[in-house]
View (tube, rainbow, N blue to C red):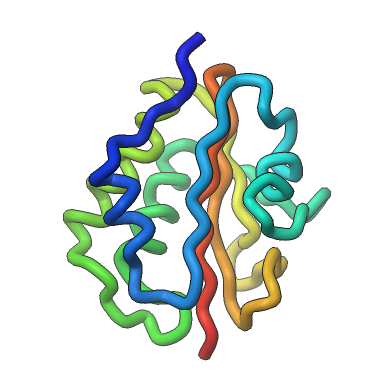
Length: 139
């Protein structure tokens, strides 16, 4: 089974956000069994029962939003069309169907996974691997 591959330009655009910190990790099959495993490998706090599972469409919307606007002041980080394209590339790297998606936020609240003032992100898991994109901001 082939591990997920993210094109270098996509990874670079995703990591070059004007925000305090960005985590981007892609793992191959069997390198993580749970969302917490992916968090540990990446260096953020495992959330245990605080993970909020979301659907594929919601995951793409969340990711595009994280790439488009900053957490702290909602300042534009990149045009929405680029953010949406990058979100699609990241999610599609794990295959066109299926997968499980989780985040640390629901509605207006969130469970912190870092020592930063604000953080948010998502984890993807499926049979070909797992990945995480996480951002943090100070106010």
